[in-house]
Length: 153
Picture 1 (cartoon, rainbow, N blue to C red):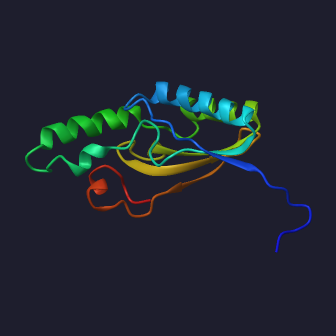
Picture 2 (picture 1 turned 90 degrees about the vertical axis):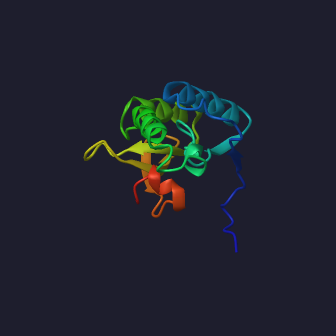
């Protein structure tokens, strides 16, 4: 049963593509999308899994033995373009959420900057309407081939 003080609100599902393997351009695109969604009445803006800098789709087509060099190169590029929580990319997202006054949930490839900076997590980042990071959820068990890229959360 709904409380009498609850009001309906709009959730925007961001159906946009990242700029694949380009963290900065993808963050800029996300910030633009947040502003547009807010202007259209959204109170929450939700982006897909691994939106920044994109889903590592190559894990489903490259063979670990045969394509080892390619896989290492792609992983290295993904490491370079991954997001550091409390870094410049998340600062931009937080500023966009605050300016728009909306909550944001966005999937990122998170660099484990608290440790070796050599592992990546598939992370869902939560930002509130005041532009503060509320938390993050790391995918607990990456699926099959995703384990070539993401560490267990």
